[in-house]
Image (cartoon, rainbow, N blue to C red; front, side, top):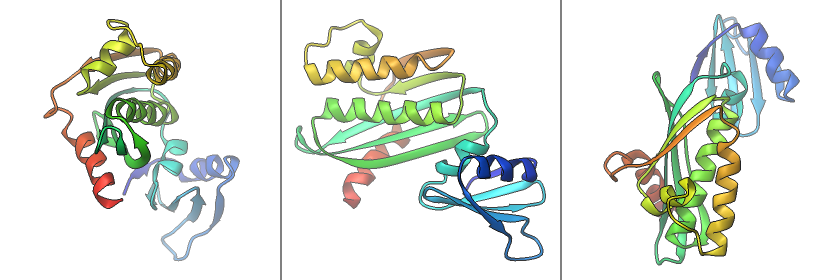
Length: 197
């Protein structure tokens, strides 16, 4: 449950401008309540508490722009191709800023890895980060995106173009291959999504 310390009157205005449904608080302590997408928020003095199935829908609107993030991604496929899922985590010096996972239908492992990278980069972009260090345990994806390896598969080529376009949204970026142990949280999220499907 994210908690954002901020000017709650300015936060209310930002949410209203974004089309959120903002209403009065339900108690003497609540300044206001808001609903937007799959998230809801309650404002108290100098802080907003966000809940819901996708807190990112509100948090991305209220978070201060800029900054640096570490982005982890992982895709999973059972059958290759088979049922597939993605997991991703956006981390700052304050801890986990956002994370997510979902099933993506039938895909190969490489397609799932690319899809996870796309989800992760979109989240980091939506949160307004200026620069990202992206880490994944798929050497193939990292080498293809950075241009060290060719991409012969048409589907993967299309993914590579999408990823490069997303990376261009950042002032600075770095993409590197890491061992699976370093990518443990994203891996766990991707596998949990498949387990729960």
